[in-house]
Length: 265
Length: 262
Image (cartoon, rainbow over all chains, first blue to last red; front, side, top):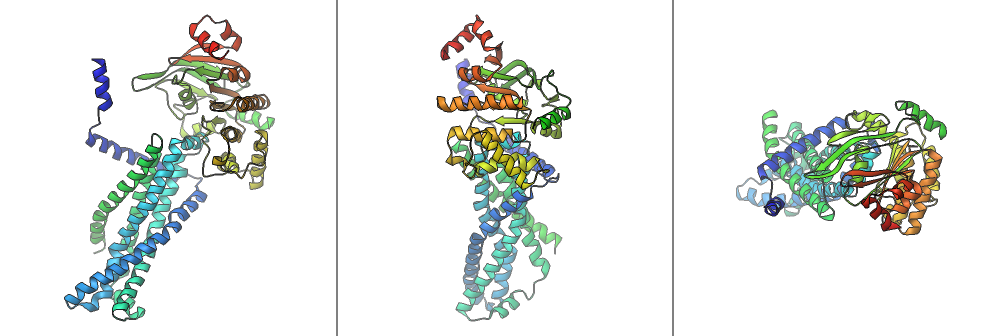
């Protein structure tokens, strides 16, 4: 009887709905703890700057490459469609608007989620399973403040800057592609592209990536700092950090796009 | 250094030599249905070293984690320098922790920092009154104390297990603690390195008059460095006393433990 119950308890799985609700509850509690500790001095400025370099500067080449590719693809695809509908003159506007309002923010978010989310998840998980996080706490230093708050803040600051870089490279490579097919000066391309656009058209989509930064930083830090086990736990944290932050990033985009349309009609 | 130790003693609730720096009272802790600590009580005063021995899985490391506040007991309390680590505020726990040094079982060095940066970590975060050069000097002094002169620029992965334990010990001593907690300081080390660590702990003990708890499986080490030994089985302290007291005991478990090593 007892052996049967012990075997069944070994194989028992928690209800997935309950497990999901628990996960969200723990994530909320984690973010609240991080926010609470982050606003109390002394601030971990040196670690924040280090993370800004790690997350921001070191992601720049990848983001620039992704932005450039998007610019090229958009120019090729939209030109073909616009020529078919006799609206070829709208090519610069289409490229600029598509890149700045949606393509650049989401691509930057996904690229950073892949690179940085996995990095934060794996690094913090490795620190957790080797008791380094406990050692930080035993040294009377709050690991939420030193490790999580600095990484989340760096993600929030870096994402809009990287998005601007992706937009820049996207527009430039969109122009290069367009001019290779039908010569147009950069000045004319830019002038036509931004002709009907206001500052608010670009501000809100760029700054919505702060929310992406919060999602990437918070999910990856949370997954890393709750890791268990050895190498398997580290691998699992890295994977789930990328998968969950990418998923939440795309889902949040749906809400943010509608919100921007309501707030900035 | 002696003066700074006395100042600290006065600061933390007037703990003097007569009062216990560590006062563990009826602590119980379970994980699921497994009870790892079952009403454990003991006291450690300054200048005393208590060695906690017992079979694997008897909750010795959990006991250290409760003392430093990394885990909370299900019942009972751990009073450290007069503060209850389960109910004290975050600020009070932080203050108590600055006066405790903890050597983890696997040293738990920060693998992205050099040996020097590891030892300097507590100083960087707590000694804002010290200049950069004073901190460097203090780190140099600590590394000399643990016999690691000239190794400050190495990464933890580039040094041996014994050296990692020494670095961990130097980091634990960085803030001149009143309390030192050592989780299996000689585990996984060869007999010569174990002996060196024991001598080092004994030397530090005598120089700094710390209240120490050493969790170990190593009876030779316990006999060398401890003033008292607590033997644990099934979450309880079976016997607590000097090594001679343990030798006189009629308890079968105590006898088994002693004769495994001697």
